Amino acid sequence: MSLLIFSTSTAFADTSEAAEFKFLFLKAAENHNETVDISELNLTKAKISNYLIGIFAEENVWYLDTQYAPIDVNADGIVGKIRLYYRVPQEEIAEKENLIEGEIENIITLTDGYSNPEKIKIVYDYFIKNYSYDNTLMNYDICRLVETKQGTCAALSLAFREVMNRLNIPCEIVVNNDMSHEWIKVYVNDGWKNIDITKGIAFKNTNVPNAEYRAFLLSDEILRAWGYKF
Image 1: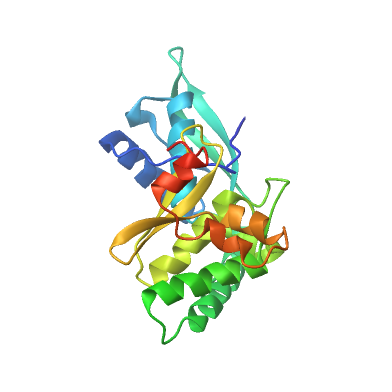
Image 2: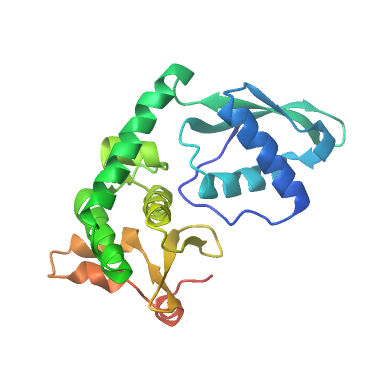
């Protein structure tokens, strides 16, 4: 059995092989299948792990556990199937999806009637005030974030991007080079700006007035000056 800890993530590789793996994986997950047949892709465990990190960074598959098991591995290390593990029974998924949807709709309602720059700030303020960082690194997905009000940088970034997507505001997840941290970029006022919700929460906890905005709408140059490598 292999274990992936998705407190960090990486961009999903844009290749036909990666795309085919992603399609097969998500189709199996949607159907709540126990295994994914990838025998035609000739993938090693290392490649599978890399592709899965990308999938968990980009897709809302909160109902999946981060454990997977390679099955039918041949002498050359090529994996024929992988076994999936689910966090919750299939019959509970709809209930938890409703919980997530209710939280997202609640946030979106707060932005009614505002411009895109104002909406981004409103959503950021909500995240900073209502969520905290999960030091256990276990709450790495949207569902755990909504249930516990605590999340890793991955959970916070995924959730923020989901809200931005609903608001039709361009938003991307960014990961630093050593995959130890992630944050998001939004397109606002004719340019891309960085928002690090995790750092914003940390700044807020200093109790310095408005310190959280030191992590809001930053240029790449500022992040690199702080030591971010991406």
